[in-house]
Amino acid sequence: MTTRIAILLIVFSAGSLRAANEAIERCLTAAQVLEEVMSIADRAIPNEFINKAHCIAIAPSVKKGGFIVAGRYGVGVISCRGAGGQGWTGPSTVRIEGGSVGLQIGGSSTDVVLLVMNERGKDKLLKSKFTLGGDAAVAAGPVGRSAQAQTDALMHAEILSYSRSRGVFAGVSLEGATLRPDNDANELIYGREFTPQQILNGQVPPPQAVKPLITTLNKYSSQEHK
Image (cartoon, rainbow, N blue to C red; front, side):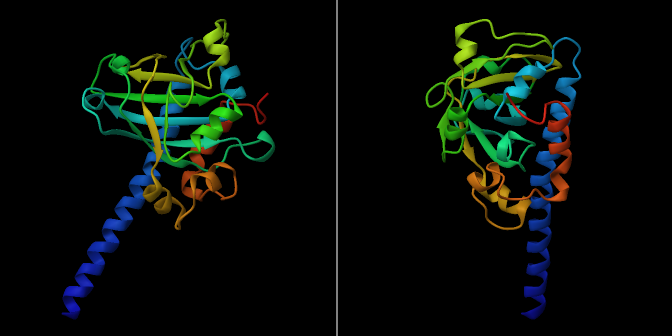
C-alpha cells in the first residue's frame, strides 16, 4: 500500500510539474508571438497604439474549429500597465471561447492580439467573463507603424483586435468572443491562488520564469501610456 501511495504521489507530482510548465510556456509563447508580429515590416501593430494601451491580451494558436462549434477553443495571457501606468504587470491567463467566423482567414490556427485602449475596457476585462462587442466595444485594429485611428469606430473602441494566420497579420473583428480567467493556470504560474484583479493591478510580483514576456512588452512600448 505504501509503495502504491508513493507511486501515485510521483505521478501526481509529475503531472503537476508538467501542467505548471505548460502554463509558463503559454507566457513564453505569447512573448514569441508579439516579437514576431512586431517584426513584420510595415504590417506590425503601430507603436502608438501599444503606447496608449492599458492592457494587452495575446492568445497563440487559437483553434479554427472553435469558430464553428461553441466551446473553448483558445488560451492566452493578459498583462496590464502597472501602478502609475508604468511597466507591465505579470500575466494573468485567460480562455477565449466562441466568437466570429471572421477569424478564419486560413490555416488551422490563428494567433490573436487584443489591445485594451482605456480604463473602461480594463474594468470590463477584470470581470469573471465578458463578451467582445457586447460588454466591450471592439474594432479591427489598423496595421502599419505610422497608422492612425481615422474612423469614429476606432477612436471609440475599447478594444482593438488583430490576428495572424499563415504569416498574414491583420486587424480582425472578434464580435461575440468571450474571455474568462483561467484561474487554475494562474495558480500554477504563481504558486498560490491570486485573483486576476490582484495580478493585473500589479499587486503580485511576476515570477522570474515569465519575465521574458514583460521584457518583450517593454521593448515595444513606452514605459508610460498617454
